[in-house]
Amino acid sequence: MRHRLKDVAERAGVSVKTVSNVVNGYQHVRPDTRARVEAAIAELHYRPNLSARNLRKGRTGVIALAVPELDIPYFAELARHVVAAAADHGWTVLIDQTGGGPEQERVAADLGDHMIDGLILSPLSLNADDLAGLDGMPMVLLGERLDHGPADHVVIDDVTAAREMTAHLIGLGRRRIAAIGAQRAPEGASARLRLAGYTAALAEAELGYDERLVAPAPTWHRADGAAAMRHLLASGARPDAVFCFNDTLALGALRALHEAGLGVPGDVAVAGFDDIEDGRFSVPTLTTVTPDKERIARLAVDLLAGRLAGDRDAPPRELTAPHHLTPRESTS
Image (cartoon, rainbow, N blue to C red; front, side, top):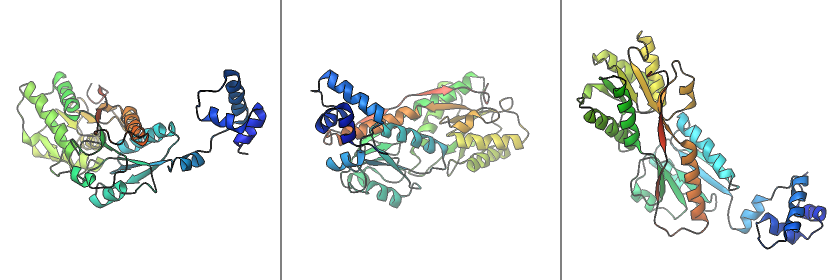
C-alpha cells in the first residue's frame, strides 16, 4: 500500500500543508513538529510522488544518457554511475545507444523537452556547429570529440594519462613500446590525444618514434586488439611492451600473445586504459589507466542539475575528472 500525504498528516497530528512543507524542505517549521512528521514518514515508509511533483514544475523527471556503444564495457559502467547520480535528484535515466552515427546522435540530442528534461551525450560524429544548431535543451557532453563546444563538457586528460602510462612502461625498462588503437577518422579524438601522450613520453625518454610500432584499430573491441597484436608480431617489429588505448583492445592483445606462445609480462608487457571490471579478472590482471568514472558521472549530472535549476544562460563550462595509473600483473 502506497501512503499519501494525508496518511502522514493523520499519523503526525498535523495538517497536510505542514507535511508538504517538511517534505519540500521548507525551513519555517517548528523543530518538534518537523520531528513528528519525519517520524511518521519513517513509520509509514512514505515516498513522495515524484511524478506529480515534476508535473507541477513542468518537468518529466527523466534525463537521457546517449553513448556510442553499450558493448564497450566502459560505457556500460559509466551508465551505472549516471543512474546512481541521477537517483539522488529523483530522476530516471533513459539510456540510448547511438552507434556513433550522426543521425542517431542528432535524434538523441533533439528529443525535446516533452520527453526528457536534459541530455548527457557522448558524441562521435556531431561537431560543435551541429549541436549549436539544435533547440536549447540542457545538455552535458562527455568525451574528447568536441573542444569549446556549445554545452557543458566533462573530460579526462587523455594526453597526460597516456604519457604517464607510456612513461610507466619505460620506467620498467621497456624500450620497444607499441601502441594499439590509432584512428584517423574525425571521430577518433580520444585516439589522437592518447597517441599524442604516447609520443610525448617517448620523446621525453629520448626513444625514437617507430611508426611500425603503432597499430591502428577501426573500432576498440577485443577482436581489433587481437588483430592489431597479430599484425605487430607478424611485421617483425617485436615490441617488448604494448599500450592499448582501451582495455578491450588490451584483452584482445592478451589473447593474441597467448596464442603466439609469448609470456605476459615476461616477453611483452601489456597496459590498457579505462579500468573495466574484466581487466581485474583477466589472466594476468591488466595494468590500466583508471579514470574516475563515478566522478565523471556525478560532474555531468550535477552540471545538468545546475542548468535545470535556472542557470541556462551562463557560458559553457569544461570540467576535468581525475585519473590515476593502476599497475597490475600484466606489466609487473
